[in-house]
Amino acid sequence: MRIFHILDHSLLLHSGYTFRTAVILCEQQCLGWETFHLTGVKQGAVSAPDGE
Image 1: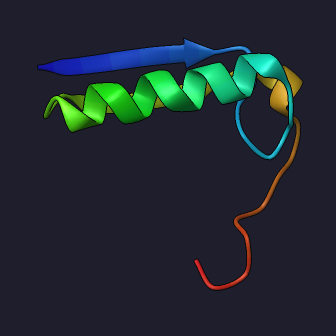
Image 2: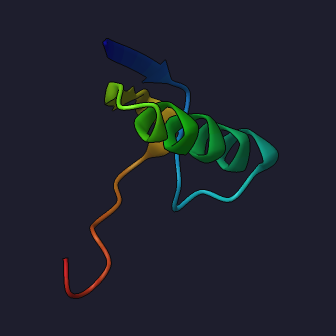
Image 3: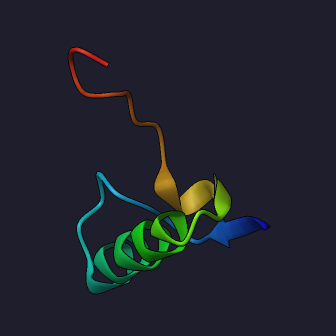
């Protein structure tokens, strides 16, 4: 199954919303589902942590 999530914001911004979303994504991926994620403008400019 493929699931496309449109998110207000995601990790690197810390909030209950992002932590709950991370758990949902992890559980969906554990079920073998393929997830895709798009964040809105509230996310702002972020860069990947060093080493990625």
